Image (cartoon, rainbow, N blue to C red; front, side, top):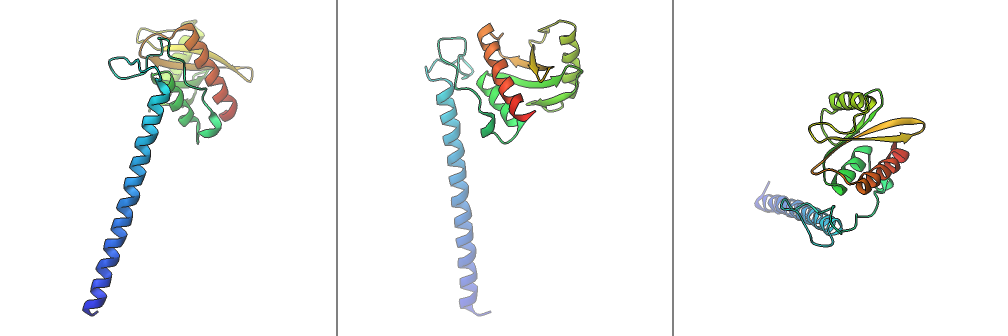
Length: 171
């Protein structure tokens, strides 16, 4: 290989590296834009708590409903619900304790435990988890929400409706 061939080879390597770097920068700028857009739509009044989460208890309206068709999986929809309602995690389980989906890893034990608590009539536990009974195709699906502060009746109702919509599409 002569010096011209070596020079062309290095120029090709440099070009490929530059294109890959440019594509990476574009990708990360897109992620930043999506994050900023999500924050603006979640807290349009500008009122935030000390941790920076939108203040859902105030006068700020809830963001639009979750559209399950725009998500690629049940877990993505549950993640959108978790974000919308400022939950630490959100898990769905059958009444007999089987896991349907969750934003939390290893939620099988949680699904079994809280489904049992729900069948005993408990709607909240000492750790702050709130249990929702959601009717779906004649069965009860247990929603296990871990909010940062207790959900108001309006928020709990909206959470149940969003969950019904997600279940209708994915389950």
